[in-house]
Length: 462
Ligand code: NAD
Ligand code: UDX
Image 1 (tube, rainbow, N blue to C red):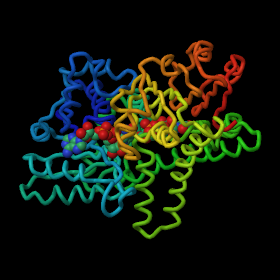
Image 2 (image 1 turned 90 degrees about the horizontal axis):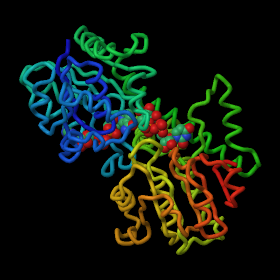
Image 3 (image 1 turned 120 degrees about the horizontal axis):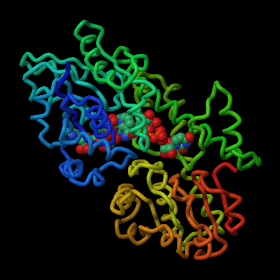
Image 4 (image 1 turned 180 degrees about the vertical axis):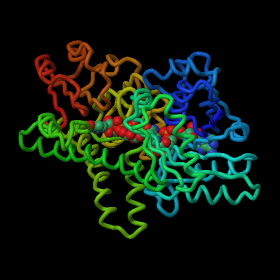
């Protein structure tokens, strides 16, 4: 029985996942470690509302388990040394340099973890890949761990995380499945069982799937590629709907009722974002290319091309509709996060739409209920399209949506936050330039109601 777990990486996956394990397994000590001191400090903040990751229901769980059997620390060596099982939940972003730049997963943080585990460990450990990794990464980790020369035995498991941000707590509490890949040897099977024994504390047995390591690693990339493909497919149809008078919501409903297709992931949008879809598909494309499978690579790359097109055409449509010029015109952005119920902004469509509109000299007024002002500028400056001064001149962040919408020519909805539906739209209309436009990039507002007030309302795909 495992009594002591360590998780390296206190991010969107490591934090929530370990909080649930600690809550459901009060007899296991769970320590989450990270190099980022301010992140750990925030996880340890006396006020649980200040934890660094916003997820509905997460702060309550942290309040219950923290200090009992859930700990957050920057002492990585100590936590590795004490643990019998080590989860690696560090980031695996797209490489920004060298071979595979812009496509391959950057595994430097993974390798650093493996080397640190190898250096510090004095007893046998089970190392669990929680991060999303290219297929066959486990063999690289194993090679690093096995060359330490201090006689410690390591078992490597793949246990990819399928949670989606915004619903992390529900996804973790009632997962569709838990996937565990391990070696077929006796020791490998024993390690798999030890991890299964943790999950059985709250996940029904039939939902725990065990496979070989490579299937597990590849299944994660496959799941994200399939989900993203659905969004790009419906987004491709959204453009055709706009040209033909069909309504993408009606089309989505009609095809979603076909049990072979199913209704999920058919919401047309300004484009998918988030830290995973683009990075994981690019990684898949890179893997396919590296095996010489060019047609396979091209097939999946098209999902990304379609997504880039969807973001770009949203911005283009705003410019075209506002009489082909947005220069000096103020446009409000409602939402900056890549989806509702998260403060994560990685790859959010809002960033790219803002960038395109700033290039047209628009002035952008942003309001998002959970994203901090500093983060919005970090996202924009990261693109390096223009200077930081130009960005802070061109884009202003507001804490109040009504203030953000004052005097604007148009409002663009970039995130589907529920609160947008409850606004007093008549009030907003009264304070806007006329004609007052709304570009609903998420199909969340009520067209009829807004048109009755006087808005010119345009949604994606209708
Ligand atoms: P994140 O950037 O939020 O968190 C990663 C953390 O790891 C950071 O806080 C970083 O400081 C820390 N870290 C990096 N190297 C370290 C080291 N050597 N020692 C200690 N700490 C280190 O990333 P995330 O969103 O939690 O994603 C982590 C992994 O999980 C990625 O591989 C991602 O693809 C995968 N994943 C993410 C999601 C998601 O929704 N975000 C879902 C499923 C899987
Ligand atoms: C995704 C996967 O769903 C999850 O299983 C994996 O572990 C991590 O990556 P996440 O990125 O957190 O999760 O959010 P998800 O709900 O998948 O949404 C991704 C993007 O697609 C968002 O920008 C979302 O707004 C967009 N989307 C999703 C649509 O545009 N339409 C849809 O119908 C669904």
